[in-house]
Amino acid sequence: MVDEAYLKAQIRTVSDWPEPGIQFRDVTTLFENPKAWRSVMDSLIHRYMDVEFDRIGALDARGFLMGSVLSYAMSKPLILFRKKGKLPYNTVAQDYELEYGKATLEVHADTIKKGDKVILVDDLIATGGTLLAAGQLVRQLGGQILEAAAIINLPDLGGSKTLNEAGIPVFSLCEFEGD
Figure 1: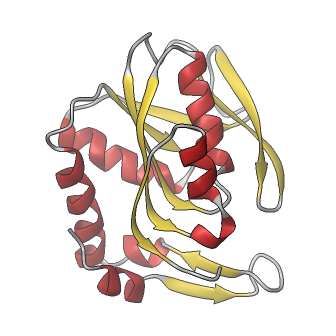
Figure 2 (figure 1 turned 180 degrees about the vertical axis):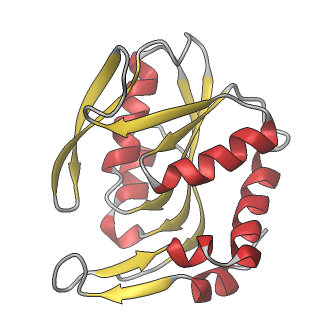
């Protein structure tokens, strides 16, 4: 498992972005650092290596990077949860609240089969809205969520609590308090 102090030191904090008072946790620095990126992905691969599940659900957009590596390493199908209007085939949609507004998440209607066990991945858990919407779509299509995994959890924003209350277990590699 990646050392939390090391991981946190590799994540750039951008003050007052995208609006004043926000401490934005920028994971692009992890993608630019092969040692840190390998540590992140190896930790997630090891977490799920002995878990029985059917699919990996990756959230637009940084979750796609994590999901594709996990999908390849674990030989599991990858499901893409995208912003509205980005998928070319029949979709199901779920509206949700963002930290800074509202949005709609979509997934192909034929990508999850009844009973499929899904692990959701995204870079960050803030208010939990995007992961909650993905979980609702998984359930709508007859699947079940084993866990929502992220690199960063911001527990003070309540997302992990919201997800747990909705029956979605949460795992993160590090936490930033007070943000």
